[in-house]
Amino acid sequence: MSKKTNYSYVGIAFIILVFGIIFIPRIIDRISNDDITREESRSKEVSNSPIKPNKSDLAYLEINGEPKRVPEFSFTNQNGELISNKDYLGKVYVVEFFFTTCPTICPIMNRNLVEVQNEFDGFENFGVASFSITPDIDKPEVLKAYAERYGITNTNWHLMTGDEDAIYKLANEGFNLYTAKDDTVEGGFEHSGNFALIDKEGFIRSRRDSFGNPLIFYNGLIPEAQGVDDEGIPQEITILKEDITKLLKE
Image (cartoon, rainbow, N blue to C red; front, side):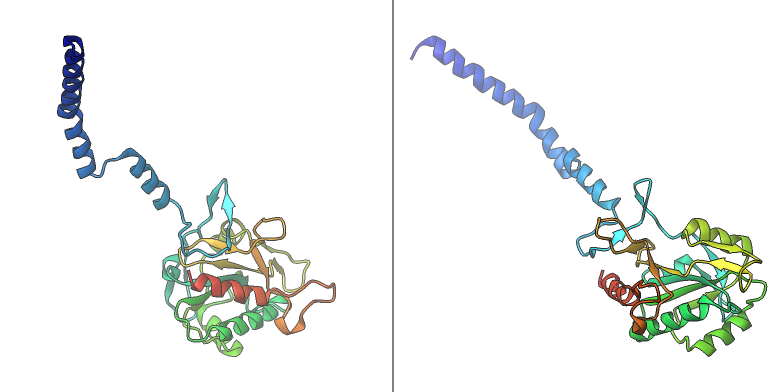
């Protein structure tokens, strides 16, 4: 073997030795401190996303690309207790806006919700949030009598009253469920007959339509037994029950 070849081997060995002295301790140090950039990136991506392996196929309502959470709220319920959005964390619940003197759609909505309530009797992690749009009339004692009249027994079904401006803002901006005073309509108020469905983490959820878009809300105006209304619109209480079941399993 020539001297030139020997020098080549010596040079390669020297380079490997220097690499080992300089870089291997650094690699070991980064691993011991859990500081690998790729792993950090993956962990950050997972922790910031509401999508977890056990999630159902129900969609998130997204605003500017971000899943929409229920806004913070705090109102008094039919038992005189202060209830906030935090009391619903860990629970699947349905949201509605109503008033006790409503002569038109509210009785239908609440009879439908009582049917949903009875379907999930015994589920401690299911509830309903009903916000009165006539809080000056619907004091706690009025709401309590209304609950008794309609057979509301779920302890997580809170009928809430409080600051009028805050309730209207919550309806129109927080849930996009239209609510307004209107002296020209029966009862003096207009409000949506839809329900919103909220998951255990406080996100607004729904199934998708045939185009893959979130339906967002559930029609609360047609009883399940009726099937369709006079205009041929199908009831959505059945799919609401199905989707509550999916969220309870998450």
